[in-house]
Length: 133
Image 1 (cartoon, rainbow, N blue to C red):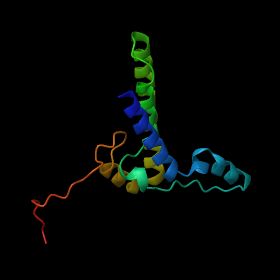
Image 2: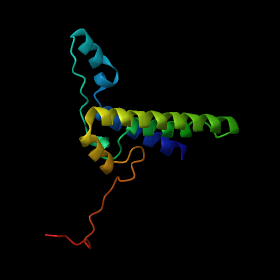
Image 3: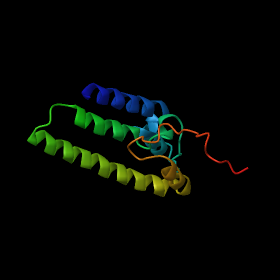
């Protein structure tokens, strides 16, 4: 189970790495904007790759790593719970920032894609569904 969690975390991190603008995430673009005296601070909505399945793959991966490391003892359980709560609170704050920065397109994206647990990975088209054509 532990190695499965490591593998899932790696896939989430790798998927996020492939779609995120790392210069923006690391603050490099913001620093360049300050140097160029640019007032533009727009955030673009990206929904490709892993972001089709989960809105915050890196936070999901971080939670998996928190729970995969070490055995669970009374002390580590408390630490894992606190770290998980911290990540979830950070995710909710990030959600608010994205709603403020992107607006309606992000709200529509939120309705389609889960926040942390990619439970909508496979959607089957049932042959028994009636089509309204």
